[in-house]
Length: 312
Image (cartoon, rainbow, N blue to C red):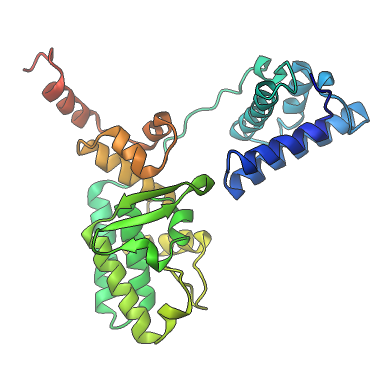
């Protein structure tokens, strides 16, 4: 059994996440931030930043969580504990450490938040308003772009980070599919509907008309006013403005369109595993949290499908 300091264990774990697990930059940054904070706590508590792992007990971890109790929500404290559990599991499986003190610490009870989503009628109202605004505004590449963005998000269910990372070549207009590079650089092909295809085509024609040569100047699909790649933060800002413009005051993030996509497919009878594949989730349990199944619809599916349903 190797004798590692905390700093060595942290460095090896982050390298493992980056090279073998191929996690996204955002995920790696979150892990690193949690581990650095715990490392600072250890240094203050032990007076030695190079302390060995054998000094980390469940009580030390509980003390760490107590130290951030007033500063952080339960969800953040729970994530930090999960980070420590993951680190020790890696050390256990690699034969570098025998114990997992984080497993003996109770997980903070976190109330599961139901994410916001739009009903089908509200989605139709929103997207139809965008389409009308784009087609009636003469040649406005911005209006056309906004319509294409949200038609594409709802049509495919992809993450906003995946949307802004799309290249023009990632969309197949003949096969009506999109090539997506998701978390951990995992690639998947997702279908895209005809309305989204039409919106994308309209946007690209408008962009090319107003700025000849713009399409060839960058492979990025969605552009900002300076011609660069649009950011996820900008998409969030545009969504809020466009929802207010069409009379919808419900709070919704771009992620809410992803939840709406999954919920509407499931309510229409789509297979949960097919939805999982389109969303790019590793685990089915993650997909289940994305869906808001109408109970009446659920009862109809049950009555129509279960061999012992009383209504058959």
